[in-house]
Image (cartoon, rainbow, N blue to C red; front, side):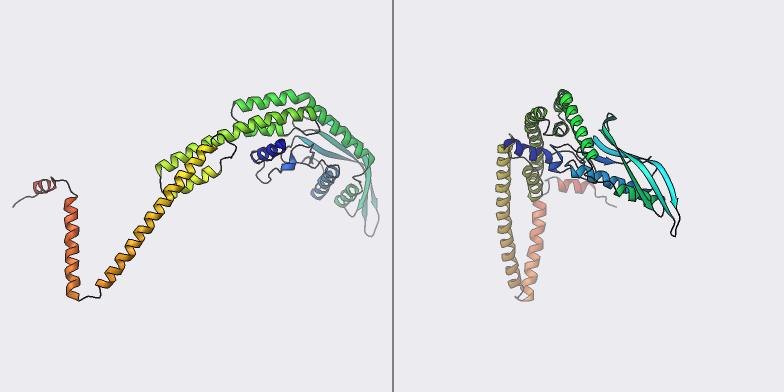
Length: 334
């Protein structure tokens, strides 16, 4: 249960690998084959699209659908025409026999893990339609394809088994550089069918996860403290609170974060009480002014004069004592 809990959290913290797609939780812990059709394949655009769809169907049918989280392993295909005939019409049609060679491999190290050849044929009013018809004829449940996928899967498991030490060392190096998300991502790609390596990676991920949430928590807490110290008001409270709410409850600084949050709330509440008090005083004063406006005009004028004088008195009281001397020095008699 604890491991499952940690997996959910670290997957949420992974870097975005693709601007258009975001990895899902179930993209990790399994073997995934990403369909790929080379741009150099001499196929019409629609036929390329149909071939990619077929590759997706094959991978998905065997529980190995592609994942943007781990683009390393691919399933791809190459088509070679064996015969091509023109069938007189109307309408005139093209009949093509072809061999489609399927490959599973490591796109990073450029290694082929398994391959198989499926012969098929298609008919259409043009080459594009003939290609599409031939590709559609291939069954995803073909025994040769099933064997081909099992061989590829075995080789991928072997890759992780032999590379486990290297994967852990790479993650350790990233951890030392405080690149915690990248380190977790590196370990998370190991599928659970590679039992020994998978368990090692899970254990290491829990350690790195703790380091990450503590580092992130300390950063956010320090930033929240700085913001609140510089702006102990509603605006500062909002920004600081937003940062505190993003601190993981399991972080070691969470107790400090909670104390800061309570202090902020206490101050904001106190300020709110003061605001309400001032607002009440203002409203009371406005009522008094409205009542005074109902008096005779002469009385109002007297009050205004007194108000002007009071303002003048307050201004003088707030000025330095040398102000008059300084002003006199700037007067010139003619």
